[in-house]
Image 1 (cartoon, helix red, strand yellow):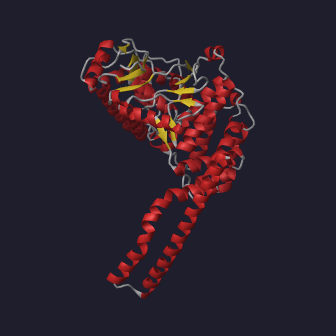
Image 2 (cartoon, helix red, strand yellow):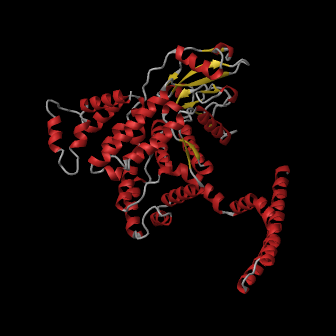
Image 3 (cartoon, helix red, strand yellow):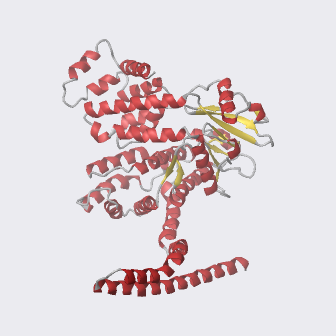
Length: 512
């Protein structure tokens, strides 16, 4: 099977002239004659980016998804190729109803009609990894059933192996190969793709995002029905709404598009900075808007196979940079990169500051319709390469999501001022992170461990002094530690009393 796929890849590459794109850029020039030879009787009128996109579409869904992911790496690709790859669409015909029923029978151990009160044989949506059918549970609950495409795992394994082999060749024959790190890109793609093959993992992502936005007036996330889920099948609440791309239908239903655009920005920043857990596949096919019932006017999120996560350090770095950016404090942006170790310590702050200013200053005080995040990110990455900045893998999905938000914003409200919308949220978040509220929150988080550890310190120190010969200077240091531990205990008691007092005051305000 792998040999057959290899033959097909070679034939498609020859058809669209991908061999010439590689051979003509071979660094030594030794293969230039071969590039000329392969051009015999072949003429290509379209640019290389368009031909690459068409080739990936011909090779099937896994290569399409790889091209989609590659399009977000504006730090790696020429702008023309990145723009072409961004046009890739995941158009895959559905698999047959018989195969879907067989998958469900294997998952549940019994026929589908014994599991569901009703199961619609025709799928409502189909993609490269899975397809979705509507159904009804025995208790009458309407659900959506996501079924993994039969036999997709070995196909993915074969294609990933071939992509890795191609990346190895690319590193050797293309002058930009080492800098672009194609094997690392393939490994990154492989990780995300394998995660999508486990629908229990996607169900867990959905459940977490629903919990994060419980009682939200901005976003609705379907409930997972865990008793019906497996690695190959995911059953969740059926959501009813209009795709975000159908603007006329939204207007006819009285949806305020300007409010929707502002809500989208707030949802994005809430996921990133409050939760560090964000939906990283927010293209229009995965975002709907509720038009009926209590959820009317809210976003509906679907498809949770790709989720991004950020730790506290990442969130603090991003918030610091965003706020400094909004305040046009480019020196703070430059220092944040140096302090984080993302650019070499020998970097001149003034030069780095000037380069960032040249990229960011032109886009201020302009509506979204006049700003291209894609071009801005490209210029930022070009600046980063000049100053030897390392691209952080954990932020690649964030970049992809930001580009999706840009596209949604342009559709809903081209006059949206993204900066004015986002700045108040970030300021509130930073105040919560570095103010007295943050101090009290950290004390509350650490208090249980302090309460368990501090009482043991005097006994542990006494045991160490009694059982081991200790130098005089060490004895003095241990005695100091005992004294400090007692002071810390008193301080802990004081903090506990303070927290209790604050809680009482807050309760009094709520009652009155």
